[in-house]
Image (cartoon, rainbow, N blue to C red; front, side):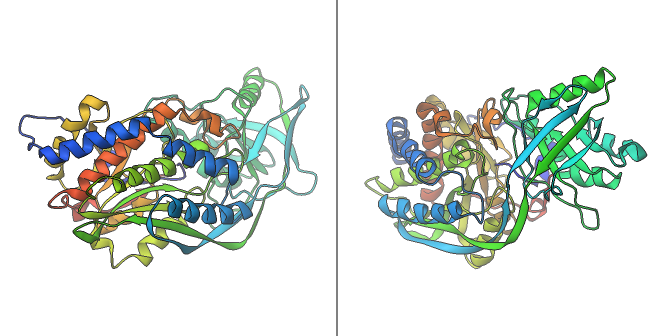
Length: 474
């Protein structure tokens, strides 16, 4: 999850919860039976759990362009084939290749202290021996701009605490700092940039994630401090102390590399040319195992489709699972899929992306034409007794966002993200954080929704032309 997201223009005004009303069309008994069967099967499956374990324990962290990324592509092809998918294949994608290298940091004065930090994705390295300078603090990007000459020759430190919220919205309010702090600091003459990690953990484990260098602005090294260490520097500065820090980053950007999106299908029984996408992303950051981000989402998508494929009668349309490449630091897989499959996009009737971890799912957000509300309400009515029937306007994801321009209806889980950002993009993103029971609520919700979309007599109304414009969060 979790680079700059694609945000629908209409969704910027807020997401209203879809109310279930007596006017909702009554679902057929066949649909009800199928959805209830899928939900019950999803509750007891080990499939998603075992898929996540397979990816994390046999491949590990898999940053785009790395040797592990190539192993992940091979793993995904084998995993989909072993689970009975058809037309399993990899589609080549050119991806960025960045390496972290060795990294270290310390407070030199007023009190010597070794700091825990990690380079932000895409950062340049420091000169040999590192960067040492006095620290000046800002608490927002605007605060960085306001430093003016005070920042010249200094290390700019941006201190902003991310709020813990169940819907994860604290991330969107804080992540622009990670993306833009380095270039904003460089504009005022800084020699380096440090930020408080964009995460909610109080462990001494920093959170990485991509930055964006502005064209024409000097590239300075940038890193995230573990939150307790960032708070220490903040306290020292608040007490009027002069804080001097030295940090060294071995980061470097290599020539672009080859990766791939990996696809597998459950063919539809009547309209195989029409497609419902179920997706997550295959790559991860390099610090942990990439278990919650996003082996979990991929495991949910694979198992949901597999369960549908085991039904006595498959749905009318084809289910296509996509393991997207390069979500974390470039979205090259998303763009490549939209380009390669441009002629098919009018036949994509929906795209679901799961990239919010492994927390409990209560339903889905949706982005489609207004008439979709009544259809989705009837599905929600069936699923509500199982705890996965919430529907709200506003759904999608970074990878499937590229399909929005073609009007493809987009969906993403309504998920408890209150603990997600404790481990997100950090060394603590490991398999032990996966709770099978909570995970399976995602399998149940995705399987039921995907089946309903794939088996409906008519597809949902597509996203209106006026709402197909997207913007990227800063």
